[in-house]
Image 1 (cartoon, one colour):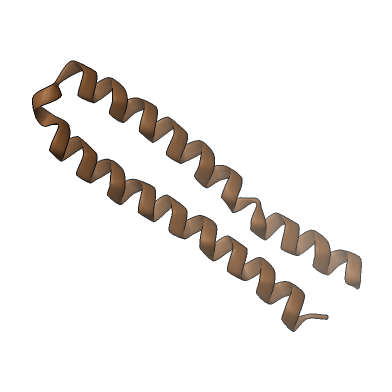
Image 2 (cartoon, one colour):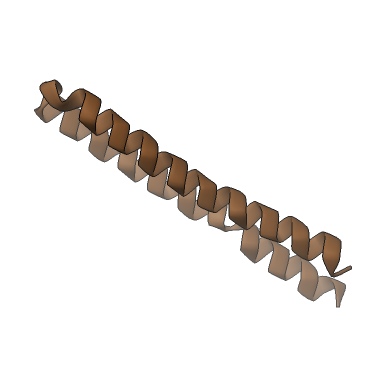
Length: 74
């Protein structure tokens, strides 16, 4: 039973990998967009920050679920 809990928690924490990849891609695209249109930097930055916050929230939710799996199912 303990092994299954550990596997479930590990899978839940893997959301951080997806969030990291997503934030990296979004940052690269934002840098390209700012390089093409420097006058739109403030709008691009605001959208980038909002998107990064949402992606990071997803990673945090996965981490919390992983902790809950470990703490509540042992």
